[in-house]
Image 1 (cartoon, rainbow, N blue to C red):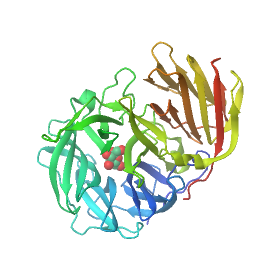
Image 2 (image 1 turned 30 degrees about the vertical axis):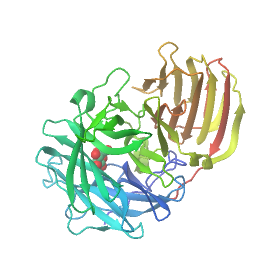
Image 3 (image 1 turned 180 degrees about the horizontal axis):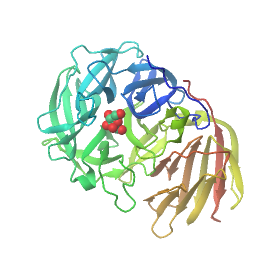
Length: 461
Ligand code: FRU
């Protein structure tokens, strides 16, 4: 038996973001609420800090903030070479996992694969049994081998599943299936399809579909987009199509694809509806093409803070869920910050900084003397720019005009999550701080700041 990978040093281990106990993590899976616990699962390879035959790692929480790592929920069996991404739904007093079986019958060629959809269930939310007659769904005739990442929800008596898929025309699309019992599925509609590979991608990974503030939203992670101005600079992106499903055609009539986060390290979102009706999103705080320096320490990957979604000004806004305030320990700053002075924040902190407009140009620098993250706002174009001072270190997006410029920044030992103007724009970054991080304001625009030290070891592994 292979031994699970062990973490060798704590230097980049995050204080309050969820990671693996050791080994590799990618997409969040099965985000759900069952018998008083929030559950999150994730794509997991326990034996090395690199992608391998996918398992489902598992953690649960009472408050979405303090997570308790549990044992592996799903491991590939003789019929599967990997348990790929999927979701969870409560039915018949059980927690059901709906996942993709990934199969590579030709060991010498990993690209020679097929994918099908499978289920497993649990009565205690900890131990899972795979259905004996899996798979419950195989790909349709008019599809290539890309057919994965089921997201299931209940509507009335019926269950629906949206799947990432690729038509024979090699364009990404989202298929929706319907079921009464999670075991037998019928195609309901091709909800939406890419207009072209360059603008919307050849494959849509990790789709998710929900109603939000009167809109129908298809959130997904397309592959293959061409960079366009400030947009689409990561290898793959995550974003949404927003509009309304036409009741006759069952197609989503929608606007253009909009990136949901503009940082380097954000991919493969999943949302859940909390018992109080909030739509909460979580994502992998990495990207397939971004460096992960923790690999040499025996682990790789993390999840973002959970974020509450709303529609405002025709866009999706993201705010960290209210519960994050529980992470605050002592207050570090309160009041205006003097330009060019350095204020120490440590390595796990929340900083709220509001500038009076017109604040423009270089706004602030987060620095530990070695690593830097600079934030600026271009005065005429309203282009908000972050620069992490590495190769391809810049990311930017346009901000709407506003009377104030509000920044809310969550620093952790190897990350920064930046929320601009109440979540109109977000930038998610892995940044491997080497020492105590300080903030330096670079503009003379009037400001008000508040900062707190945040909890370390918020999660158990
Ligand atoms: C997205 C993804 C999914 C797949 C999983 C495999 O990051 O490629 O499409 O199910 O990762 O680990």
